[in-house]
View 1 (spheres, rainbow over the protein chains, first blue to last red):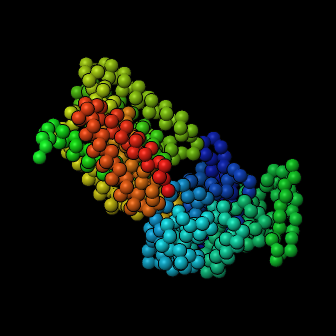
View 2: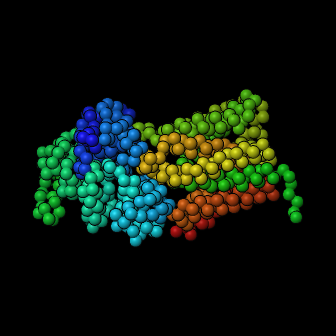
Length: 243
Length: 262
């Protein structure tokens, strides 16, 4: 029971001759909310795909609750939301959640994400934020213990983002371990418990406030960065890159 | 009751029964962007047909082996991030097609058989072909009914399907192999070059009008039946190649409905 929710030990991943992730070690405790930040091509998505077992590491090992990723997935312990859903979803919101998740808890899950009123609408007619919440509902209805989200806030407006983060906070408070990849450094560091800065290698992991350091971010993104911290009630912080 | 020549009964029955299976696969071809796979396996089957005729074995069996080999290679490449998908698939299907042409040039029945398999020939379709068509269509429909939920999830996103507990790799390849069998069985009727059009048009028409699976599939089946019926009728009465006539009817249906796309 004391093993971490997600454990990566010196994980390296090569695709073809390219090294995507090199020697990454992470230990994520149960109920923690982690953000993964880094530049494009820095290995963030590959890290999530390695955690769920879609990508096999060339070196190192990955465990979810002490199990191999495939075992944990089979047991329904892992919920995953890819960055882009590639195909169309030709179902109503409710039918989709019933198909992808646990039909018994489909309505309840849609209620949790605030979409009970829109359950009969075709998925493709929902707004970007509503689609994202429907996907989350499908994942939640299966009662996962670990939730992996790849850029879940892409294409969602500010208001929808706010309600989305509140939803994630509630899930974290229910004991679900969350790992979220995002480009939005300012917002992520505001919401998560811990952050991992990844650019092929793990540059930093720990307190998100310490990640907002010009030198660290410069090393992470490979260009000069200025951090402007606003009032915490306002928008957290902004990061400007200097060429 | 009008006179119906007995010789057209097996091809017409084949067309209808294969039409149902093809219109279901058509949905996956369109949403999974498998048009290239469809072209690839039909062209690869051509090489198998030639080999079968040259070696005196059943062209259905040899073409199925060639087509499945090509389908697995193409699907494997499609799922690999490190390979250039378009170029690799282009090389594979042109290589299989080239093998077919070379082998056909070595066979004695060269001209007749080339045209039969390239463009389809209603009169070459007999009751034995109908049995193959019935078998493939029954297995395909049963597969879809049993694994409908899983197949929908795979069509949405394979990684997402995997994390929903779907054995996505096994089902993906099962779907590809069954689809390939259906294409192979359809080749004698519709021809290597044009069978792929029928795997794309029905569901595309369905997607013009709906985003609900059952409606899309219903429109797809009706479209496919219409294309098959009109195509074969025109082919028979005006002595035209069935594959080309059917593909032309399909094309007209597609472009006819395109302005009404929702």
